[in-house]
Image (cartoon, rainbow, N blue to C red; front, side, top):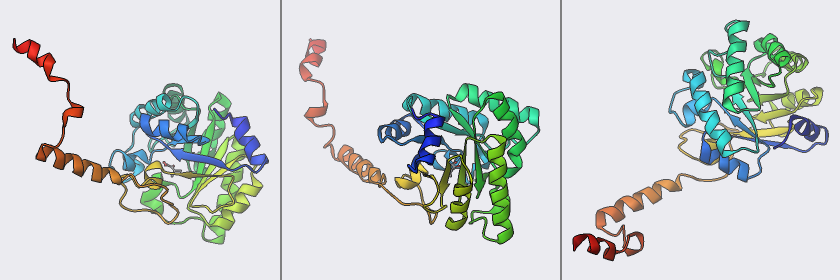
Length: 270
Ligand code: KIV
């Protein structure tokens, strides 16, 4: 498993960091088998595997359930777990209690939180020994306010994002995810921070990239953001299911090769 200090060293040595989301045992196994550096148990699981409209419906229980399965599938990969909507940003005691529970019980190596306003929480959690990854730019838990669109476009918004990025680093964040911001802004942030900056829709100059498993493998997704590259096509599963359906209907499956031998039943019939 990559340690935090190895991930930080990768930034210093200009070695790009790879991160992919995983939400269950088989996806985690695949991501680990592909030697991806980090797994994110993203609250995007609300849409990708639970069929919700947004991440807002995801609960702490959902995150615990899926993270544990991911840990079983990828015992040797650095796992980051999202703190879901409503589990943080309430008050410091509630936030820390939720963070402790998620960190202790999820099997994750770090937690991720969205938004610069959580800088004081990042500081407290860090003091308690919980590694926190910050997430700035497009923060999907705030979709009701921000919408799904590029952030940091104006000079004022870009300046605020740079300030927030510096603040979360100062508060102790171990890494930063930047989502859906102009590439040149992401470059500036990555250069000015000493912690690894992982981008999604943030251009090529961040220290690493993250993509959502179901997006990159075309698995049950109907709409794709501009920044998604589809590396595989799991929709072939539909063809396999159709063939199975037809073969059962026509009596073609199961053929002899998929049956237990008849003489055993013969003994029961005697
Ligand atoms: O939940 C998620 O998948 C994320 C990524 C988009 C970074 O936060």
